[in-house]
View 1 (cartoon, rainbow, N blue to C red):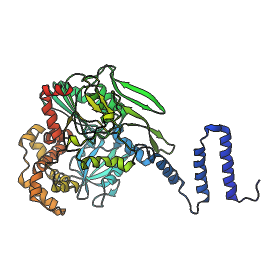
View 2: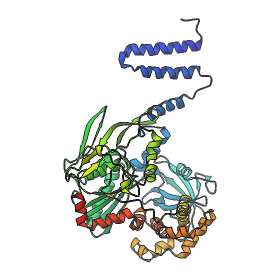
View 3: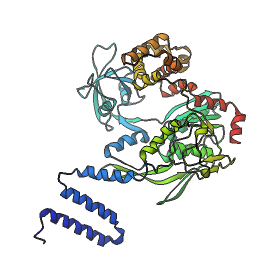
View 4: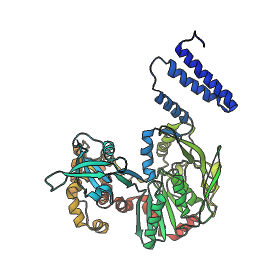
Amino acid sequence: MFPYLSFIEKKVLLFVIGVFTTVLCFGQSYNKELQKLEMAYQIISTFYVDSVNEGKMTEDAIVNMLKGLDPHSVYITADEVAAMNEPLNGSFDGIGIEFNLLNDTIIVINPILGGPSDKLGIKAGDRIVEIDGKNVGSIGLKNSDVLKLLRGPKGTQVDVKVVRKNSPALLSFSIIRNQIPIYSIDAKYMLDTGIGYIKISRFAATTHAEFIEALTNLKRQNLTKLILDLRGNGGGYLNAAIDIADEFLGKNKLIVYTHGVASPRHEHVATARGMFETGSLIVLIDEGSASASEIVAGAIQDWDRGVVMGRRSFGKGLVQRPFNLPDGSMMRLTIANYYTPSGRSIQKPYNEGVDAYYGELSKRFGHGELAHRDSIKLDEKLKTKTLISARPIFGGGGIMPDVFIPADTSMYSNYYRDIIANGVLNGFIVSYMDSLRSELKTKYKDLSSFDKKFQVTDDLIAQLQNKASAKKIQFNEAEYQISEKLIRIQIKSLIARDLWGISEYFQLINPFVDSYSQALELMHNEKNYNQILK
């Protein structure tokens, strides 16, 4: 057959015949553009002058197809899928330690309670110097390198050797990796009589269960009012947001609905199970609050259930569905818009490209929106009303809070920025705790005694300044005076975090944050609270 054709030409001809046969079999249902894409792929892989990485060519094609759709439709490689899912699945497989790198050495900050390392007796302050027979001291490891060495499938073993103070010899541990929880609630505590505080960092598979546990615990402490902090929460699972909103809204109240060209309208309504359907509620948001956070804040605002305070949220109102591909990679495709109960789409425009879409946050700073509410341009055509009090609200680019709180930059300076950005403050805390952790734990039995008695001395500040100077950060007295209060409370809060946990960190740092302080003030003023909600 066709003896005058070369081998390659025969190959292409057979491919074209195959495609033509497929078209005949499937008729018009076979997309002509797909046929075109397949032919281009075959021609390139067959005739291109050099060898072709067909896997990369396929991935590049998928990436570019998605790039023209919207900023949230993306291709994710097989290697990236697991790392992406970890925080949302609520766990990972590993040895269960919090660590830091100090002077090129892995230092255990804390073993995670109940994890494999904790059960074997690994302690805070231990230095890991060998992993599976490989020296890991002073070889230039990064955090990502340490994670690759210590994490692995559940049930597998990793052998480590550690140096411990007052121990003359290396200590050896054979650790069987296990599932380590990742918590999505950073803080939960009573901040005043009857007033509780819960901070959610992401909406993950375990968020609702964590929230129920936190709320139950606070109710035992006579909780009647709640501040829900969603600042900086970039979102997560849609169902997790729905479950959280359900705890605040009465039965059959609409929480959110989704709709797309290929996705019929689907409504999510509250059940009868809500744990906090009455009682004052404040939701804190900012420009970092996105997606699932906006679903919760939007539902609370639309039903006049609570007061939303802070700054305009990010503006992501698109729903993505993951599509798993045969090689373990994934395509996360936008399939619908979501709408708040009043019918608002809060998705901001993305017709100028991805860079402009994400750069919009910088523009907010540039035109003064983060400092002045009057700088925010609201589209009157997207104006609607809340469902109980008929208060005016807007769509088209995030949730606009009921009470605007400008970004507080009064204590920020270049000197403060530099000691944070260069890791000086964090490194200083790690070094300080490494030498004094045992003494501090003995001296301060709980956060209350620590808060009352521990002082950030001038000598401690001088040590920090010396560390900064060693990193070529020049001391500036005027800038230090601007940031002194913030630096001192950061030091104290970070020490508390090392001694107890992240919730204790927020308990100390929050009173110095404007959003938190104003929310607490409004909670104490029932008249003003009710007046906002009419």
